[in-house]
Length: 438
Image 1: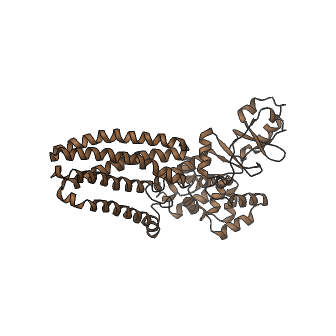
Image 2: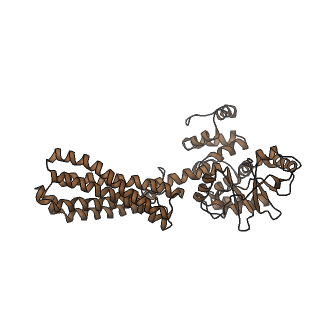
């Protein structure tokens, strides 16, 4: 559909009605300017706001370029505050100031406050569209409040209870509220001890809490426990996806900021430092091989077999590291459990190393008819898989203890350990048994 031209508003509206706004948003990156301009002119404010709400930052900016300030302010009336803040944060400074100055005072205050929080913090992803009910409110009055402001909020399944100081003191489930005696008070049906976060908390930690307690939304409070806003589950899903993508990229030493649309210079700046680090580690492995150069020259078969040992170590270490990075991100690894896991990985390395080492030793014997070479391969495989298990555990745990993301280039350091120690174990054993290999 990206080459389609609509003759008039009626034709475009028919096309729009067939799709969900998120489907339109996903197509925008392939649309030329004239199609985006047509969409902006054909859609009413509510529909266009729904497309903006579902679009990524780049697509939003493309749409906003086709919308003048008056129209954009009208669109804001149909968008959640957190989405408005995300959009405003990517606008040029002069346009952002223009729009802020034209907003109503109350709305301007809220947006300015939200813009102050870091993008990846609880405050940066919260919305101020929520329902808070006074502790001393009757159920009948609470229901009327929901009728009045419910359509303007994102989540009404969970309602928040506050006292006269606007301090968060509990929550009420909508289903429970509907079934309650209308003459009773909110205090009689509320659940105390609400789970909440502070605006400075990292969004990843917020996502863990929401997942742990199976929440539909989580309130954000200030130091005085006054509610500032809420974070909804749809935003949490976005956070989980973003963090997963970030971890996946960082494990390979790639910046989360890079995409296929990144310029050549930016890609060089993001990738080259890690490649240089990788090059340095490769030279370290090469240095180990050079130490045993005499041994390799006398038994050429070693050069063909040693890469099998190092490669298997890298694969086994990646298995351990991947599990550790995941569990660390979920907060499932406690300090006292590290030793238990370490012993398990050592035992696993011995068992897996023995199994794969035996298969490799048999194949090597068939190829080279040397029982000592097969024995060396068997022992080296066990040794390197034990090394892989130890370093696959220790690297992400150590990075986590340094208060850094355990996914950051862990694979580079792991590959270094399995290559260097794998070559050292294999070639060291070969040197010891050299007389039996010639």
